Image 1 (cartoon, rainbow, N blue to C red):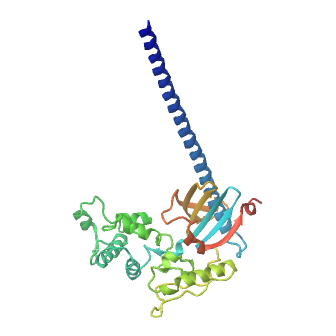
Image 2 (spheres, rainbow, N blue to C red):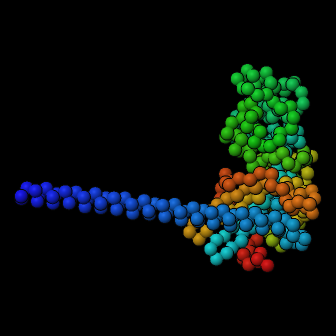
Length: 328
């Protein structure tokens, strides 16, 4: 009898231990699910705030008052609310190097700053030109269809203009490192062989050999100050040995309406630190009366060029607003 009672006691203890483990596991699962739900909710909230930043950017680009219209030279604007903040950066594609329109000299000047050796820089430039030109003649150190076949690739150059900058990844010799470096510097939407320097962001100015590199920071600061005060962009600091023939210096147009495509980066930050980023390429519609004011050409839910809230981006902040200003 005593042995049976002892066995029953052990069995009860085992059952209680099992129930305790099950209860703890259930509680842990509930906490994890609650955290996932909370995270999903805050992420969705941050994304909604970022999307609202994109909408406000489109609104401000259409502002009839030129003095209040947002600038597209890499300037950053911030909108604050009680529970969040969103920073918005606008970059005109006309302030970048067009890989379809730029001549080989301009492309060579750009590639001179690429993180590869000089021989590979030259090969990439000529392969890019061979990709976009209409013939099958191979440039020195370039690449046409026979070279792609020899490399074991199942495709050949389009012999047409690039349709997107992502197409650069198909060019023989291009790798992820070089493409990521080029991504924010080039475009296919400018349609011009020149760069509009008053629309060029610091990143682009730094890879233009005609620009006096030692004066870029002071120029960006002066341009920011002029933007804040409603003044035209200052004169661009060309290098002393530059003729400036390869670049159009069109001062004073950064407040005018942009006809080319514009990259808009909107980053939201909630009070709890949750962030969300949207990067969109937009272009004003040809006939806004019949369609939306802007066409969205590209949409990404991330950006690889660092947070807009980073300290080094503060010197690009030209306007800060309270959310109620946009609720009227």
